[in-house]
Amino acid sequence: MRSRLLVALVAFGWASLSLVAAEGPNLTLFTRGEIVLEPQSASAKLETVVGVAFGWDDATFNTEAGLTDSEWQSLTVGSMLTLEDWTLTAGLDLPTQTSSTLSGRASLAGTLEEIGISLDAVTEPGALGLGLNVQLPEASPVTRAAVGFNLDSSGSIQTDSCALDFTFFEADFSLSCPPCEAAFGGTVLLEKEGLKEVYLAASHVGSLPLGVTLGASLLFQPESKTLDIQPSLMLENPACFDIYAGLDWDGTTERLSGIKLFGLGMRCEWETVRLRGLWSLDASQITLVPSPYWSLIGLVWRLPVCCGLVGEGSVAAFFGSDNLFDLEEILAEVILPLSDRSTISLSASLPATGASTLSLGWSFSF
Image (cartoon, rainbow, N blue to C red):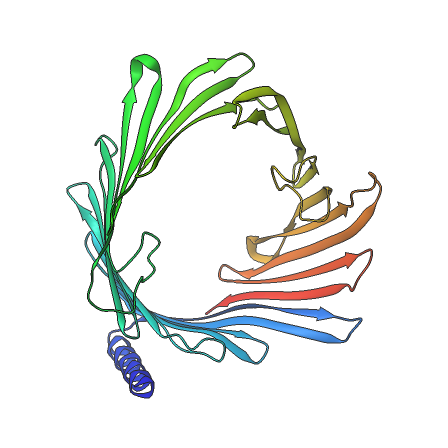
């Protein structure tokens, strides 16, 4: 079955290529990837994607393959056809060395009298799912409606069947109240078993001093209902600084104890050079700096290249959690455009402990 499918796909591709070649298609070959070298262990890792795309007028056909070292990670075939306000797309993920799954997806999307409509079909061996999504104008009380048949709201097939049983219906609605300066919204979700939940929310139901506003939400489920008050903090950042702060709010006792400072940022710019600093004070609330570091200081500058093209150079220093001068790693990178459609990059990672790495990246399109 798979061999016949592959033969059919190859035949379809060559037939399409012959057709568009006769009418002067736009043919594009592309590749992007990266080679990471570790001098200490004399090892290298290759990750790359290669592909071809061709088309004419409002139709395109493309195929793309992903390779890591010597293993094919992905192999996809796709096409797109545009007719006035409607676009038909289709794609097929073929089995590779690391995945034995064969799956396909098609979508018809467009507008009809200011209403956005999307019809999606997903197929896997022995299974089929359909979904319909309708986006209504903002002035409408109901802003979106979606229904799925053997397909959940994220587009995943639910059962190994082609019966297309009803899976879910979901609708979003929104209402505004100008006199009270509040906006109300919510979602109704029905599943095969019946009503799953009704969610109601208001963005502004009150305010407190120091830029604190109050929001509220109400969740109805078949066996419970939950009321939640959500205070939020609005602060105006001073010039060249970013303040990352929030409220010390206990949702269980609904007690507001104060304001918490989660992190600080600094940003300055001089002509072609930008300075950036970040200090994370509470990584459990917001991630500003990659773990296990707590701060970074970086410089980014523009690099003029031939023919009016502009590249970019950057260097960043990462600090550990012991003290301000506990330098743990330095990252440096240079990005150089060779043309409007081709770019190469060179980067180096120099950690205080562990192996250093050098990377060569590229993105070419012909």
